[in-house]
Amino acid sequence: MQTMDLRGLNPAPVTVFSATGDVDHAANADYARWLASFDGVKSLVCLGHAGEGTFLTTREQTDLIRTLVEAVDGQIPIIAGITGEGTQVAAEEAVRAADAGATGALVYPSHGWLRFGYQDGAPQERYRAIHEASGLQSILFQYPDVTKATYNLDTQLEIAAQPGVVATKNGVRNMRRWDTEIPALRAENPDLQVLTCHDEYLLHTMFDVDGALVGYGGLAPEPLIELIRAGKAKDYPAARAIHDRLLPVTKNVYHRGSHMEGTVALKLGLVERGIIPRATVRSPLLDLPEQARIEIAEALRAAELT
Image (tube, rainbow, N blue to C red):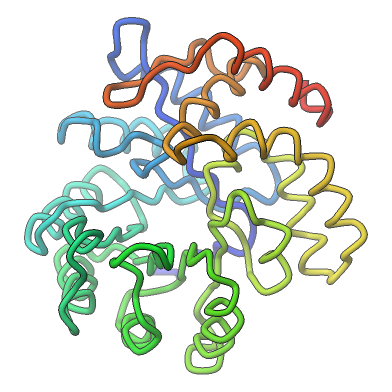
């Protein structure tokens, strides 16, 4: 199987629901086709945080993967977030995703590790089991430094060297670690594709990466594709100009009280852009106040996205 080429923008789209809270497959297909139409979008990554993936039933997850696979019709790969708590549970989740047509797996840490930490070797086993069971190409997901599920450098290096691991999505949010660990990953694994997922710090990481895997890409693919190109060209003035143009949107989506509110804000922004029909979310997410919608609409106008 050909290795996924993720060197560009890899949006993590929201999941569109009907007014009654069911998955709206027609709206999700339209949304996927819109994202896939942009030159520079390299994949769609579903069932993660932005996509409320853990709020969907097992059947809904696989049905959504099928919808997205059919919608993009081979243009780009569909990558599924794998979030199951136990290793065997996650491996079976990956098999279902592969059967539904996914090409890749964004492998989340076992969520118990967020609170309690992980035993040395356990993350490596999680990636091995998922790849051996499903054949999916895996993305190493580096969680923020403030969590106990952030992987030390040795763990990252060992995962990156395992069969089936083709990229890393790094959201460490600690620039001291970024500046030392990203070069080490590149030196040990030259073919590993490095993707930033720092939605709120894209300018600061854009000059060291092959691409971005971000929920932000589901709302503003056009400027983010430009930003990635500027970063690869080492054109700081151009990248800074894009960053500054987007800053009102960045603030209104990602500088809120909880990062989880970003998913709600993304949906409000997509409604304002006319891309999705409604901003319905699932509990435990809550609707944002009307003032937030107004602020997001104003920010999008300021960024010339509406």
